[in-house]
Image (cartoon, rainbow, N blue to C red; front, side):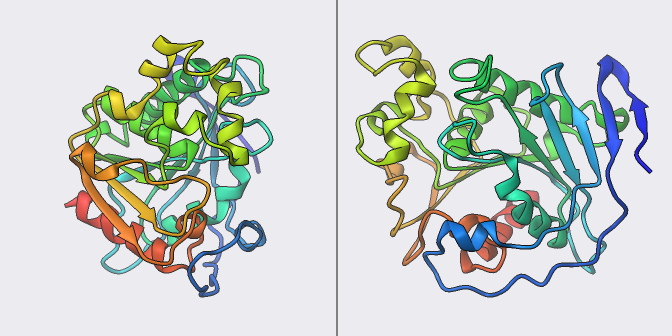
Length: 280
């Protein structure tokens, strides 16, 4: 039964379901298409936690499955992608959250206002991410400390994760999955996601130079424990000079943009290995 719990600072949590049975994710070849991710089964989150007053300012919590030798720490704060657009919401990463929980991690998956939503776009979207991350440390009387939290973001969510990781230095680490590392260069590209970057930024780099500077991970401080996971077949987010950013880079041959969010992929195995490495 759903129940409302009053927390400090007006945070609240809604119990959504009991523990679900494990999902057996199909093994897939590299360079997965989006349709295969969208069709995946998932276990529902157990709680919904508001971190603000807007309907889109919430986190979903997946509890780690009780697996032998599973880490259960750190907390994974997950930021979904989708070109920063309101058309792409948190749902397409439900399977990823499920897979991470089955791998032994607690997952705090953030929804946030995006381009097309009132208050979305730069800087409102980024401000939601910061607030949502900090809310995780206040949950359940401080159950999840920032020093035991790793930020994971995919694509446009990776862009937000990189910026937030540079600001919240207490975090244990940051993992960018096909992350947009140079938003200025990205805005000049021709694919569909690149072309909506000016909508998120409310202008082109020549029109909003200061805004692009502040929103550009390649020009802002990065968390000391930042890892870039990238596939060499990614046609949506090119690898913009990752090796010049002085952080760990893992480039997987044959991997595309959506492999990282499919728990049946080799890329997902690499992600869990890096999480366990940062957890030590």
